[in-house]
Image (cartoon, rainbow, N blue to C red):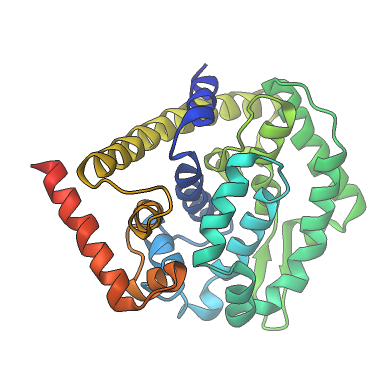
Length: 295
């Protein structure tokens, strides 16, 4: 019921695309945790928005995999869906950030290690027949694990050792596809990036896995609704305080700043086709509107 309520709200929400962008940031943070890297959502946002370098970029061999490679595969997985909300979210995202370019700059080595595993999981997921139920999703995930163990050497499923000697876990890749499988099953019309749960999910029995999946869907749907409520309130307040046309730079800037509150003036200027100074002027207008809203 919680998932259905969120899905229904997103169908008519004026900020559904912004919400989907925010949930991508959440998915990247959770996927990084699953891959053995502790980063929070704000660190990820600051990097995507151009306000900071990639989280933990100085850690070197202390991290099993770089955050940029994780981000590349998160976005690539979500792009498999034909969800209109995520097509619109991709337009916002790609205007600000190039996942492949960042990965190639910081961690190109890992791409060749993970691509065969990601493609194997993708092919399984695309071929699966699913019904809109938790039991069907659990069965699908068990099939993914069984197929990987049968078709890829077991040590590659668990870890891959690079030339530098790092041990890189890879089962987290299967977790990337849970939102895609939920969408493909017909449980939702909108892909829900926030449904990536803990990697512990894959160590459970079928019954435990189903209980954890249901709990994750319930909790993340409730959090997603709260995020959507806040975004809609902020968007509506901005519209009341500043009257503008749909094609105005102010409205476009408002949308990008809601999606990435830490977006730099330089990157916003690039998105809008204006100077950083011009972007700064729009940012100040938005900040003044926020103050007026609070007052």
